[in-house]
Length: 270
Image (cartoon, rainbow, N blue to C red; front, top):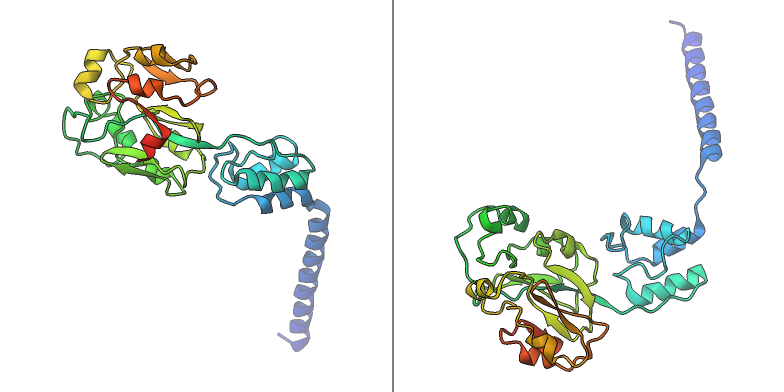
């Protein structure tokens, strides 16, 4: 093979490479997706936890939805009011102030007051235990299994298992909702952070069954509903529930509850 052949081959390969590069450059410019500056600014304002608490697929999804007007500027539960205000300035709208929320575990049946029907030796996961006979080892079929699925789901270290029951640290909770989705017993919900009265029970069993299973279970006695001067306490299929829009925090329901299933916020924190 002569030197001229080698040179021609090199020139040909180089020319082809140059041509491909030019074509790729032209194609990149033609099919390039223009960056939405508003979306980029909103994305930069979001905390970046990608927790999904907003209902979108991470912060990128939420930023796109806000920029397109499909989501409100205060849709991020983690960022709170400060983030909402910043995004509001970007979008040129006023952020509506919303009441802070927190996760709440509607069960107080820890190992000191709740009875068990057998020893569970399976996988340390609430979902796995919930499909065991009787829905878990606790005598109360509604009770917290205490195996920490919610703990592992929380990206903010805001929930821990204490004496066999999940307990929320409201100062750390960002109301992202991951613990709610992780609980197979549906014991965790979002409530107003300043909600004064909380019913720490989810059992709809008859009073006798509840009393046999847990010392602090709601017995459906209706004393709380009769004691409440504002009609905030009512019964739902044998279980006391609180209407937070009517509750003034007088404490009458908690005082009358014979099982201490209802706790006031200050008492629950101590």
